[in-house]
Image (cartoon, rainbow, N blue to C red):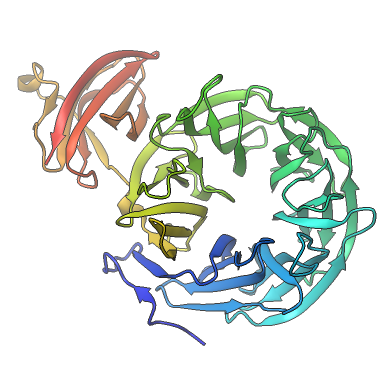
Length: 491
């Protein structure tokens, strides 16, 4: 049944481009929204209820249309557990959904791979069940989907011989399925490396190729994140360690071309300790070599990317990255930061999410059909109840538009004006012979705008109306040297 009563419409207006709203309801039984996909008319969101001492007990599904109305469904099998892990939308608007189920209510096992075709009304129209193959004993909830060049679906899954789903011992599996969930081919890879084995974090089709690229930890070298290529027959054809990458959760959702991709990452400074985490987007070539970085939050301002997928690609100029801050103190409120970047690692804008007196934990970010994004997860009051939250954000929330005008001679003695500003800031830039980069950040070091310009000369006019009130720092860099720097006040 369609539910409206729990829908809270915030910033309630509609433009010709996109709209904004948030769904917020009490998270009964600790609902965790893990992943989903957009079908054009709305978004599927999947996860489970974390309501027992042995992990996720009941699978959970939502479908949210473009106006914020939603359906939800909980799966309760009584004697065994279930969890919905990921989904990919089909051309007819239905979703190909993958999950796990089985075991008992008193163990950590999921012994069955669960595949469904689901409608926006969350009705199951086709269903397949695949028991875990001996000697393996359990599936984990780390599963990723992608289409190949032949309209089939490739599934990357984590599997274990151990009696605990969050610790693997080097085993991962790849399946090829048709659009009805029928198994075409399967292959298990027991050659992962490391104490905790190989942990996959994503799979994506390689442009102009029949290859698929897998991303994860321990595919080829003990302790290192790696990229690994498989062909259409699921044979491993190459693997490259990301030895320059420090650590933690890493995803890829976008190939710039057949030689470079973008990877979002929560990682940490080499040798850093508590509070040394930062969030970043890396450009990487197809052999795992580092090309470039956009660090969009300083070490003491953001600790985590969205746990199960932080990057939502809309087009080359519109890529959303979700991150949040968490210090482990249940009494300390926190916020989340959503960044808008482009394919060239320009930071085009930033949006803060905050729920009063709560800790926010984002789990996923995905695009919407109007060029905006959904970010979802949960917020928790200090030692109190949890809220399930789904935010719909529009591109207008992020963009700091800019225009470069010819420099008036009478203003050449000035550098930035007006200061203070109510929204419009004019910055003098005179770099006819070299490229430059403009960065705007707050006094804590958190970036709000970073953009590269080719030999600009004139008045750069920035519309900063989306920024909160406060003191900000502007910097202009040429060849990595800061040539202009100052402060301004946003009223």
